[in-house]
Length: 106
Image: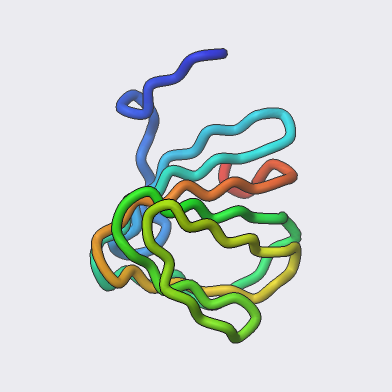
């Protein structure tokens, strides 16, 4: 499965207003998010390293108590087990990359 079309992947709503499609490799998970303005991802943590890539819109991301507003082209690194949360300041598109693979999202 070397080539995929996101239009053909299942979309899940993991949080109200947060629609996501997943691509899994043997070692990583990619999450393609479309967030409605005001969508909140509650404070949580997980053992995976996570890289948050903002593609469109703006999102307020809190990592270990520090909040920053991210815009297109900006990236945040969430270390393993760091507490983090987010709120979409505008409608936005985000790509999250997780390592190792998120088995809980399969």
